[in-house]
Length: 416
Image 1 (tube, rainbow, N blue to C red):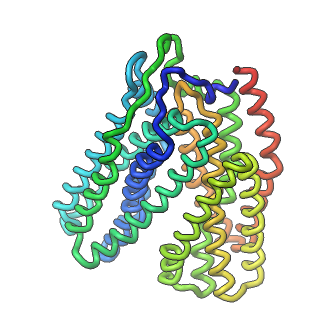
Image 2: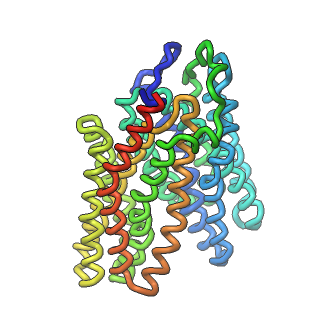
């Protein structure tokens, strides 16, 4: 039996609906904070006259999310005591409250008072949010039954999109109408409101004999071949997706669509379509398994990426490009649900948060390098070549995925 599927008789899982409700609030807060830092605040800074090179420093806030695997064993080690209740609730609630408090401080400070305090404040927020994410993922994975993991990822990805709507859309509207103080304080209030239900969460207890279990560590993770094969799955599945995600916006701009049109498409029809596709992905996982759903998503990626390649070589009407952009965004959203559900099956019951964090950090690093590389390729060789390479990566992932899955199954059977 796979390590991730080991059952602890002392586990008292929360009812599925309640678990999804509680984690939906946690993930929405996490995404709201991220959307504020990476989209909302840069927009406000630019409107206040900040230089582009200064605004570019905001990208450094991604560092804690890319490197959180380094301290994830320490977080998991404290979260999972040898005996007694686990400490997920303490980490998550305390972290979210501190984030809200820091937002209030930044609201009172004001955006006109200088960039230094804002940069330090949001840097600390990013560090705390990344740490909370470790505990949140560990909590959800150990609470979910294997057959319900698809719904867990629906909530995770769906909460991400809800957070983008709050941290970018609502935040910017509030800044425009009421100013920085009210807008940022409102984000703090929303964070507290969405976190409050988690006070009722019940952690599982470590079983008798838990002292014989290995303590969470990166060495234990990388020593398992299913983790290593999982990292390869991330690389193959995400390189093409990340390349085309970064370059789609510039491609649409260069083909005549305005930034406001893209923003409207993304924030209205696009978001609604993504949420629909996220739910459909959850249903597909429930009916056909996460692995088959991921393969299906890769097929859809190949088709949509291939069409973008053709359109780059032979420009089309704005309407066709807009429609393809919306469909592709929905496919990408559904792909996240399927991929991370598959990955959950490769996490260990003894250090779920650490294992899942390693996968997430790998995805973040892929995003950084693939985005950088796609810019160089598109600049020097054109969008068509860039999108064609992305399509090739998606096709490679589809071909190699069955081989990887057989390898991980074999590794888990030996471990069991």
